[in-house]
Length: 357
Image 1 (cartoon, rainbow, N blue to C red):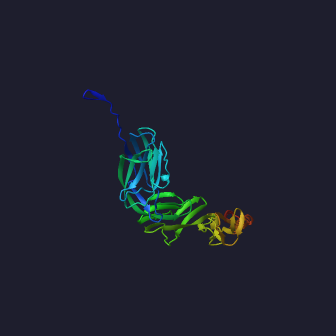
Image 2: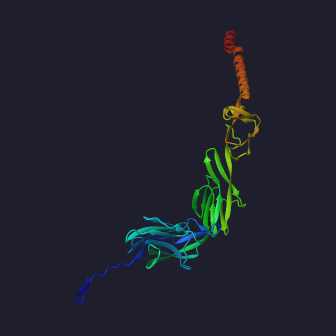
């Protein structure tokens, strides 16, 4: 109510249209892959937008712009609680939502797809539009920010599934990987041996570009695809009471050879001193004879457990024992059959006394 010269009149209240941008979140640094012409993952910007002074049928428009040329950034957008009503969300990081109240708040998210500059200067702009989508300039608000962009390239590492690749000291997920890295030198490591179970393992054989070290440095100045080659190995277990060929791991498909140095070996202990021998009988697996030869082989298509069978030869100790028993028996019998010598000396003395008397 205003009173002028005794007259009173009523001035309608006018509420200015305005927007406000807060709680902006964005990545400080991103990597841009030159080969794929994209960032992975795409950078996301979120913000809270409030508005005031709107009328029924108004719209709230929000978008991300490049400051150097004022163009909208390509990408996608989403909003809550209201949804984007324009199809621009499929092409640009921009969104238009209807306004049903004079004031309100919305949460907006933008995924950026445009090719970034090395230093990407951006701005979120919010503005109200009338029911004819006429821009209400006085309602505009903006928030400027900068994202640092590192030029990156794709490094593809192909390995068997159980193998874990380490890039610059960080373990990646098991199996083959595709990772975007900044250009320059990077350390790539794969394990020398990967134990699959007690009877199978993988052993590193080399890289597709000829490098033989599992720990290497790559110079990333273009798209790079490397494959780490691994060979399956299986164990050969040798069981024997006499030292023979040692057990070990063999490449898949290889022929593993095993042998004994001699078909006969002296026994240990007293029987060995008496000439007792162990005689080689043959090579067996699961009680089935593989070969009776001193040397044998088997193809390593799986794990194998081989036993060397020996039998005891007591022929010489037995012969010696029999000979000893015969000699002992002869000596005993000879002693029993020998005649006893008579003691004649006392009689001779008595006879001598009788003659002298």
